[in-house]
Length: 149
Ligand SMILES: CC(C)(COP(=O)(O)OP(=O)(O)OC[C@H]1O[C@@H](n2cnc3c(N)ncnc32)[C@H](O)[C@@H]1OP(=O)(O)O)[C@@H](O)C(=O)NCCC(=O)NCCS
Image (cartoon, rainbow, N blue to C red; front, side, top):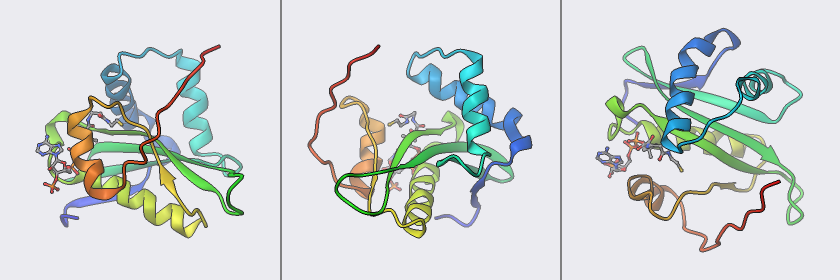
């Protein structure tokens, strides 16, 4: 990790800095969610009873990337698995190692929490993300099926 990338949890009073990156990620997926969903998500990140977390990446003191992850039960292990749900780096800071540093920070935290696996999804056509993912993890070969209610 280049020395000028700092990864740390975002504090409850840093929502204003998180919001544009979260909005950028939702725009990337052409997704719209109700504001109250973001309120609940942000609150859960800061509720010690919730297994949901946010880390931010600072480059030269500016928040340039975020990752959201959560721990969940597994029928195959005693310990939890870690699902890395959202990863986004501001377009001005891509290719600097920020995405890699965020994923590696999740690995560190998940291992420390007793998880035996970090897993995530990506779209098959997300070539840019897959360049990174192919370097830091294995492609499981599983497909996702989804039924939306
Ligand atoms: C995917 C994403 C998070 C990668 O973040 P990043 O900070 O640019 O990634 P890194 O700099 O750590 O890239 C690691 C590798 O990917 C490649 N790479 C990724 N983006 C690159 C870019 N814009 N320019 C050059 N190389 C790039 C490089 O080969 C690099 O390998 P290296 O460290 O050996 O040089 C970022 O492109 C992004 O936010 N994309 C939009 C949202 C998205 O797709 N999120 C993931 C959804 S599953």
